[in-house]
Length: 71
Image 1 (cartoon, rainbow, N blue to C red):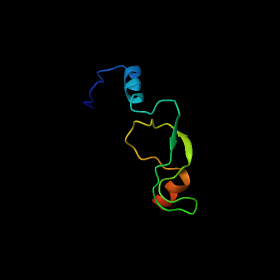
Image 2 (tube, one colour):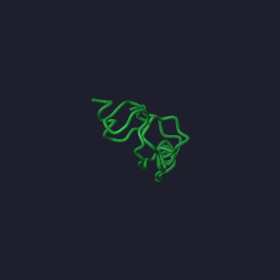
Image 3 (spheres, rainbow, N blue to C red):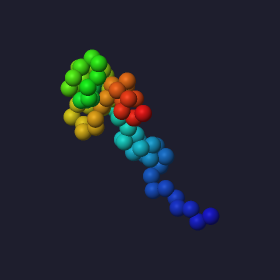
Image 4 (tube, helix red, strand yellow):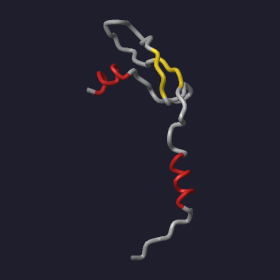
């Protein structure tokens, strides 16, 4: 079938794939929503735990406001 053989063993390939996953640790974050809702104006004050560290560039929303943003 002319398939190439892998250069790495199956365990090495598995560990390389796992490097792209978020670590198994939770950080305390604050919702980054800045729209007006009934409970606030400006930035949200809701705090929660997430697998995204505070020094990462991703925007993190509380689940309820994420759903409003997406749908």
